[in-house]
Each structure stands twice: as structure tokens, then as C-alpha cells.
Picture (cartoon, rainbow, N blue to C red):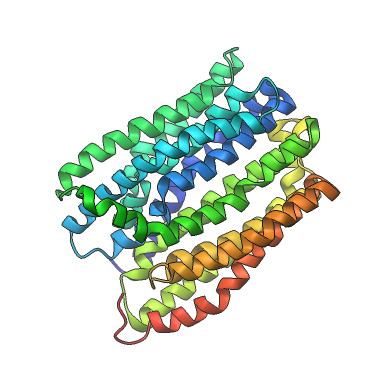
Length: 413
């Protein structure tokens, strides 16, 4: 397959197909926002934000660095062992993360909406057990389509009709939980047969946690500051103010799935060549992500308010200032995704990414809290945009240097 055809097929497979799973919530969330009311809607998105952070804890870095490890693995035996290692680590972390998630969701939810918040949190958290990272590493978008994307689209449509028919809104997160558990289980059973390899012995399990700690800490820091805004606003504000911020945050988070799937499409493509060819592909990846981020910032900043009112109702319309600030955060997220996934993680620079993310978190969370106290939801949004910018800027020079060393003659692909 020629290089343009290879890139085109991967973009179609790993960008358009997973985008179905990302867009599918738009079928049902308008019904959820109207049926639950402003406080219920804000509680649902706050719970989902907590769940996103819990998913990062459950995944323990595998969804971030796993695709690169699988892409450069020397054989199928090694790939099978990587998946088994990931299964063991993630099941163990879920035993701690999921009970804590339920408690936190109950705290941040508005009175009377604790169950909805907890279920939305569990739906998001269980994504940390998903198989999709492995499919990305081996260049297999069809598994994502049949075991994840299509089922999510179907249950979203069914949940919408169920809620409109009078069933409680909790039916939506319950259906999403089932999709993750069933799809991942069926895929895993088949994969274990196709990739025979030994399970990690008990004595090696602590070592797996130590090796994955830098990426896990980085992801946790990133997840901490990305999960803070909506629960924070829900604690500081009520009614339409919290609902409007929840709408803007939901649109931004849905949009973040697109640069992530673009990174997945380019993961093995950018790593399968060496030298000058790899340098060219890395530059293309960075340019695509930078341009995509700028486009997303413009769209969210200019259309976020009317689109949120159309989707989630006038009471949950997102303020324009919040949309602009979250648009900046989206642009920085898109660019940084390529910097880490395509350059720094393959170069073994996990510790650098971790330090930058922790530094941004240490500065950014107080900014969001202080901004929220002084200026409400807009202050939280500005603090979040500043946090994403700090994290990205801190990685810029290291990314340039790593691109030179990674693509030098004789460098490992």
C-alpha cells in the first residue's frame, strides 16, 4: 500500500469509525438534559467528569502508552503478553478506584441526583477497562467498530426513546455500562486465543505497577485538572449557571475524542518508518493536530452558545465566555496529544511528560478554584484554559529535541 493510501485508510478507520461512538451520546443527552432538569443535568456531567478521572486511574497508563508499545512489539507473543499485563493491572486498580468513585459522585451531585451521578461516573470509569488501545496498536479499527462504536450508537438511540417514553434517565448510563463490559469481554476472549502468551506471574505484578507509574502519574495529573472544572462549578453554583457550564464542558469533551482518534490513526503510521521519512510523518501529525485544535477552538467559541441551547435547552445554554476559554483548552489538548503520543512516549520520555503535567496541575487547580470563587463558571473555564496551555508549552522544546534524536540515522523506530 502506498504511503498516501495507507494514511488515508488509517484516518478513515481510526477517525471516522470511533467518532461514531463519540457522537452517539448526542442522540440521548438532549433527552437527559431536559428530563433531569438543570440540577440533574449538571450532576450527570459532574459525575461523568469524576468517572473520566476514575477511568484514568483504572487504565493505569495503558490507554496512553499501550498503543505505542503494541505498535513496536517484535511479535505476537509479546503483544499477547502486553494485553495480559494490562488486564491484570487494570482489574486490580478498579478494585480501589470504583468504590471511591461512587462516594465522590454522591458528594458532588445535587440533592436527589446522587444515583444518576454515580451511574454516569461508573459508565465513564469502566472505559478504563476497554480493549480499544490494543486495536489501535495493531491497526485494527474493525474491532472498535463492531465491539464498541456500533453498540454504543444503538444503545444511545434506544435510551433516547426509552427516556422520551417516560423511563428514568438512569437507563442511559446503565446501557453504556453494559456495552463496555460485554464488548470488552467478548473481544478479550477472542484475543487471548489469537495471541497465546503466558500471564504475568504474581512476583512480577509489583514491577508492572512500578514500570507504569510515570505514565499513570502523568495521566492522573492530567485527569485531575480536566476532571475538576464541572464538579467544582457544581459545588460553587446551581441551576442554569452550573447547567450552562456542564453543556460547554460536555461539548468540549466530546470534541476531544476527535484529536484522540486522529492520534490513534497516526500512531503506527508515524512509527513504522525511520530517519527522514519518520521525521516527515511526525511533522505531518503535529500539523494536523495543531490545525484541528485551532478549528475546534473557532467552532466552539463562535457556535458553542447557540448549539448548546439547541441541544440541551435554553436553561442549559453555555455562556460565550466559557465556550471561548474551553475552546483554547481544546486547541492545546489537541496539539499536546500528538506531542506525547507520537514523539515523547515512543522516545521513552514519559518522565518529562509527567513532570510537565504535574507542574501544570499544581498551578492550574488553584487557578480554577480561585477563579471560580471570584468569577464563577467563567473563572473556572479561564483557569482550565490556562492549565492546558501551561502543560503544552512546557513540552514544546522537549518535543523538538526528541524529534531530532528519534529520527536520526540509526535511531530505533
